[in-house]
Length: 83
Image (tube, rainbow, N blue to C red):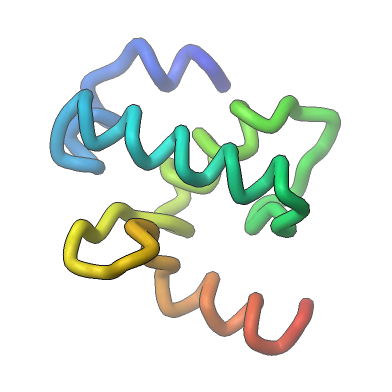
């Protein structure tokens, strides 16, 4: 999964390397603080989980919000229903 960080696909998906780093850092902090992963862990590290969330469009970065991370509608529905 870390191989995804070497491709330009994930960089383009987020809008640049700095935005990607910011998104990964913010989401890692959330997970370390107890947030539930939005993808199956399947023995993956926290970083691998965050990369999978980005690649599956579960999270995006939004500098307009105060939190900085915006969940996709499908992921927001999962969080709101507690699944």
